Image (cartoon, rainbow, N blue to C red):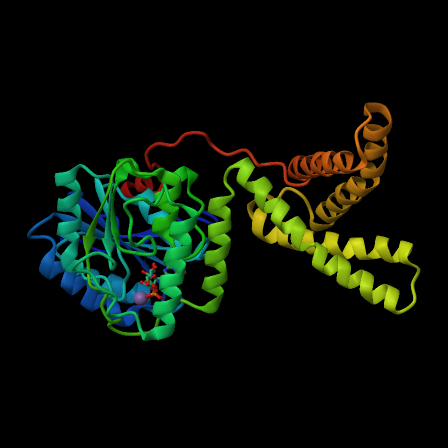
Length: 403
Ligand code: GDD
Ligand code: MN
């Protein structure tokens, strides 16, 4: 029986951990992220009790960011459960749903971890099958998929959500054809993963799509799928918003630009879009009678500002903290304008000293200054922060649970 005790002393910024007693670790830790799900907790634990422990020893770990009484409801309901229930409440919901799941992955001690939603859209009865399939096929990751034979997205409410989900799946599979091979439903939030396949240290979760994050960054060696029927929500409302949609796009860009070459391509694409504000600015300024030379210079600053905003928010979002905003703007603008100033003498040098044609010289100068601008921006504005190199295991929260 599990009993609920409170609380391990809270360190600043760390999640608080309740429920200390873990009689025997289960073969599987079911990690359930919750945000204001009080009306679903009892039914969820009830259905887990009905279908899991007799087939597979389990424990349940809630990672909760709620602002309602969900934590109290969990504590209450846990008393009637024949398996250990742990509640990890975060005061600061860093990384949203994905951040919560990663906290759960780090804290889990079982060989297998199943991640599932707390609103019963993911049927608990499938948990033993997910783990069983993984054991039999020696896969590191087993995805519950809506898109293979036997699965369906019945509970996905409305044509709009279906279209968005389809589009997102297609886009994601197109961007990561190799890493997502064998995963028909990378948007699924229901899966089983071996603890040994989790590389929690290198994960940078952002919002909802934690499976995508795991599949792309942790890259478990072997992946299989099990079909499932996405159910209707049992109670309450979805927490997914339009803002989550933007977070998802940012997440995709972050995953896709993990390599320097990919970053340079995106840097170039963003730079190309800068022509639009640049030309519009030039048009507006000359229209009000400004001479074209100062107008060029000012309009160029518009392009620079535009590029800065996009680059800050899409490309180097995670690498901004070591410099103040003013510092970054200043450096960025300096590098961007130096690029312009340098290009002309460089072209002159190539034509005069190396006898190149003007066109070739311009092309060479453009490419050279672009590469310089990219490396300069990366090194002088967004110098990568040091990250730990170790990639194995999951230490940390689990020790505290035993405390
Ligand atoms: N801890 C925590 N923090 N939990 C959260 C947060 C958060 O910020 N946001 C949502 N959750 C929890 C919810 O309480 C629920 O248990 C689960 O995450 C899923 O949230 P829903 O709001 O029900 O999401 P959904 O039904 O729209 O999306 C689900 O289906 C998608 C596929 O269509 C999720 O499973 C997604 O991961 C999945 O991609
Ligand atoms: Mn849901």
